[in-house]
Length: 120
Image (cartoon, rainbow, N blue to C red; front, side):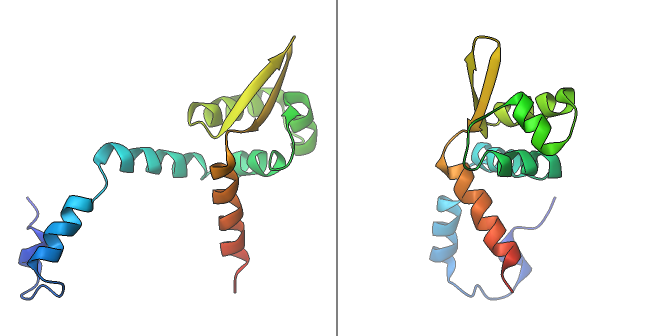
């Protein structure tokens, strides 16, 4: 069993009351697991290409296949994965399925990471 954080150093740099407050403010296991799952979903290059493709425009599966030059089965699989994590959403018109990003949060996360990567 790991030792409690307080036992690892002789002095608490922020005081015991601050440690207790930080513990109370710690996000729940359910929330942290959800966030980790979304980051895992964003950790695949093909899924990131799909997100980038959908940044400014709703597209049908066929168009995404054409842009990424991949098979429809592979794209559909990745879109299903992204949909399960509410990263993309779909709209069906007849037999055609259109995809967009689920909401502006996904767009902002993606754009912020692009800026972070490009930052020197």
